[in-house]
Image (cartoon, rainbow, N blue to C red):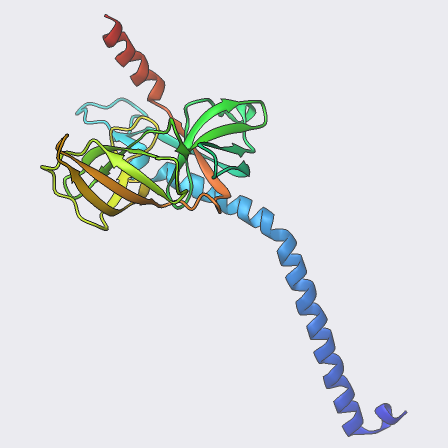
Length: 250
């Protein structure tokens, strides 16, 4: 009766009631948004994979002057398949990741794997629903990389110590490099498109016995936090490998 017949008390009551209702609605909205994050992340990953597949680095140029119907200036070389990391190791001599995509999704051994930050590794084994990847943090991992304005080619390997650091070999001291230079995938790679981040130069010295640099790099990917990745489908890899093997065996 007091609230119904007194304007001030009615105003105070309804203002307080609205505040309580708004608070509950905000909490409900936050909870609802939290449980939708997984679906939102999945949709974003699929959209990013599509955008990567459409990027110019995923195509090879066809320089022919004569074209037939349905031909285009660019022929697709790489396509991308989003996946989620379901298991990961970083402190072993040979480290692996397990992904939630397998042969049913078109995954094959030898596929490159990247994250939004950079190179992750290469697919090792595949089952119908899962695949294992030996990461950059693996004793057998060798990633072709380029550095400097001249895009000098070297090989990135993991010495088996810190999970954020690797070394780059095979670069002659006659080439010019600088501390802080970005290390990217080489355009000669069959598994990765050129220009994907591997890391950047932390320090370097010259091995006078071999006349090559000893280069220490910080990896672009923090493997303790990697969760969303992309499998790279190289649509010309088998053709190139078959032709090169044929030339070697002849």
